[in-house]
Amino acid sequence: MRESAPVGDDGARAEDLPRPPGVVRRFWGNHPWLVDGLLAFLYLLWAGFWAMVTPLSSGEWSPLAPVLVPLILAAVGAVGLLFRRHRPWLTFAVFALIAVVALVTDTLADPIGVSLALYALFVYRSNRSGWIAFGVTVLAGVVVFPLLDGLRRGDLAGAFSVPGSLLFLVVMLIAALLGVTVGDRRRYIGAILDRANQLARERDQQARIATLAERARITREIHDVVAHSVSVMVSLADGASALAEKDPQRSRSAIQEIGEVGRQSLVEMRQLLGALGDDTPDGEEQSPLRPNPGLSELTPLVETFRTAGLPVTVRTQGDVPSSPALQNTIHRIVQEALTNALRYAKDPREVLVNLDFRGDILVVEVTDDGREGPPAASVGSGRGLVGVRERARLAGGTVEAGPLSGGGWRVRVEIPEQEEQG
Figure 1: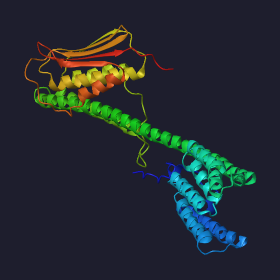
Figure 2: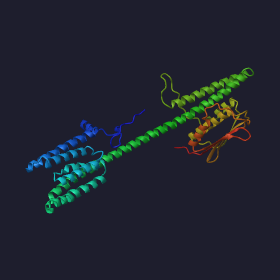
Figure 3: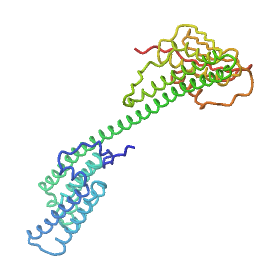
Figure 4: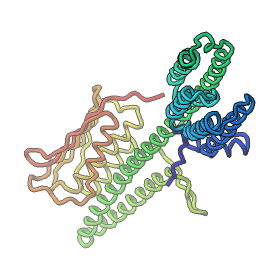
């Protein structure tokens, strides 16, 4: 049984993913949590460094407000970055909260964390989510926060810094454009892999369907060969036994006919089994493949039933259809109907095979005039008429089968005429 391949974060199976060109890239690709952890650690170092350097450079050292609060915010931001792949909106909300706390406490607000959260929204969520967050970020960073800070300080003119706002806008725009590029490429590759996986599943399903259809076809063929040959051989054996003392010559002829039917059945069985593969034992020559029997083989088929004691009459009207597949279908239907008549018909005086090929609808009708009475116990596998219906259905036809009012049985099959495929 084929084992299912592991599925990646983007829904693609591992066996369908292109192999990265280097050991390092394969390692990072297989350990996303390690990548996010390293990124969070680097951000913590960066934000902590600036939290320490900024107060020292300004000469306003205090162990509480200017240093402690930025360090706490840096730690919270680093934790938020751990979930940037799986919960990008949560990461963005964390950095939005950090910006609000930094405004209230009048501490340093680092734009790098916001740009990382914005990038994650574009890559791991959607472009629509990313642009919404971009608009909110730019509006808050360029207009709202400077306005609130100016109102708090009482200096609206000094709150708005054109160089600072422009730098903030450029950083956010770079993060957005990088996110759009990487996110679109990631989603495009994911869509291609999903399509490839879907095609692979459809291919496997079609292969399974074809296998089941071929198995059903071979089962029908083997059933027809075995049912026909065994029924004829049993009838011939019963006749040979009954004539052994009265007419030894006819008894020997019946026994010879049993051998002929058996050999013919072995040839057909080898042909069917040989079509499954070339697993022929060493030293044994494989039987040559032959075309499936058609209407030209109907006469010897009928002769075997006549030899077995079934009074068969064949009546053909119209031109024989040219399609080999249709000829084989009609041959097998007649074979199964005559086999059932040989098994179950009670002392029939005539078994009529009527083949009407004159119209657009081909009619195959097999009727026997056996005595009326309770149905005989089944001695077959129950697949005879099922096989007839399946063959007719595959050819686009219909089947009617049942007892006649005055005794006997009729099988009637109607199949539309088919043109031979060139």
